[in-house]
Amino acid sequence: MKNKEKIDLQISKLEEKYKNSGQDLSSYLDGLLYQRYLTYWDYIHLDTLLSLQIPRTHFPDEEIFIMYHQITELYFKLILHEQKQLIDDKTQAVDFFIEKATRINSYYRALISSFSIMINGMQREQFLQYRMALLPASGFQSAQYRMIEIHSTPLEYLVHHTEREVFSSENSIEDLYENIYWKKGATDKETGEKTLTLKQFEYRYTPRLIRIAKQVQNKTIYSKYLNLSKDEQANPELIKALKELDINANVNWPLMHMGSAYRYLAKDKKPVDATGGTNWKEYLPPSFQKIIFFPELYTKDELNDWGKQWVDHIFNPEKSL
Image 1: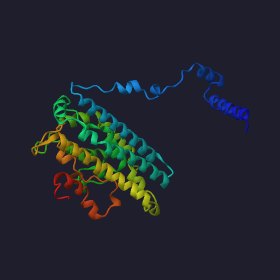
Image 2 (image 1 turned 90 degrees about the vertical axis):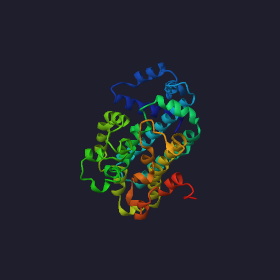
Image 3 (image 1 turned 45 degrees about the horizontal axis):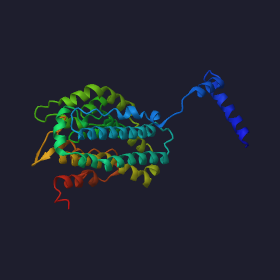
Image 4 (image 1 turned 90 degrees about the horizontal axis):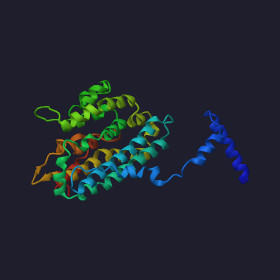
């Protein structure tokens, strides 16, 4: 096709496109003439992005702390972006399933490998001082991470493991949500009183999280997997991708947080409270929570020993050698 013929065809297609919008092509071409050239900084709103780091103290390392958490939330948004496409997909195509799970794992790997910035990239003395200006804010309040969990697996698998056996899909979303595992990490064991961190989070996000849980009921990533044929479920590449996703989200990612917590909050075997008052020594260890998105993919022994070797490495390093 000659260049002129190609241009004529493109113009014809554009005329058809813009006719459907109630305007003619000429009007849009006028707008194109007046429009400014697009720049990199305008496209990604660079100036706005770089203005979002607002420290509350004069300690230089606080800005690192802010930026890393903002980067983390952007990766969480990428994970949710892939999850939503997978959940909304009507084709049930295994290749599409594998592609999305693989992308999610790439985001998790980037997060996990970058966490050394949090573990080794700040002065402990600075952190222990500026953190007091952040009370009661906490990474515990990341709503996007809760959304990732809710999109991944039915809510009954997110109930605290000590109560999981008495709950099932027959329970209401509200009942399941009330007993979700992470709430115990911000609740006083003796009094049952919720921390201010948890109260703030519940007030702002509970309606939204319950709404999302209802929207994805029977459509979570695990539900989509269970709806595949037996042959499709047995696809080794899909199983490998989902198992990696489980380990990344529920073992490796919490483990990185444990490493950071021990670096900054553990001193002389007396742990410092987290900023939100969360009991991080019981909230973070994978083997304590036993959150598993895709339980059917594992043997009984694997389920029982979930995360144990990683926790042994943190709590009893000499035992894991």
